[in-house]
Length: 192
Image (cartoon, rainbow, N blue to C red; front, side, top):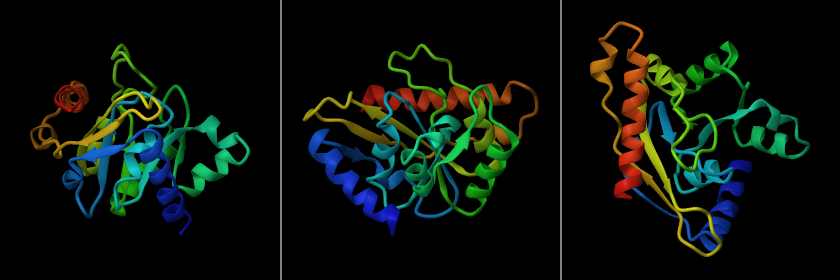
């Protein structure tokens, strides 16, 4: 109930202030585990990605955010779960796999931090979670800059086919998967 109320309120705020609109929502599977992989340009990204979808999205958030009074409790109530800087711990991985096994949607930013100029290399965590969980991987591109009363768009792409990578062995599989995810996100940004 809390999530539904907050989502409705944020949807109104984002549509008025940032003229938020989305395309490709039909690409997000209606059921089953899904990993949404998006570029990350602002702290405003997680709500933008989730408020226009019917399904609830669970985001990894840096652990420090959970220590902020009121805000930490709010993001926890909205379904976020902590990840420590410098690496994803076993507990975070277990939580991610459990969410996906339960058929939830998990949102993740492969770059690991906000990046407006594509200078940050993507981390392999999103690819590892996607490959090992077998969940659908949906690329997402946020286009715009959240300037007041200017359009910001969220584009959801078709699920990425990773089946050929599931059969491969070796250390470069995660790198190939990460590159494929980022290629799809970047293509959505260009075509957006």
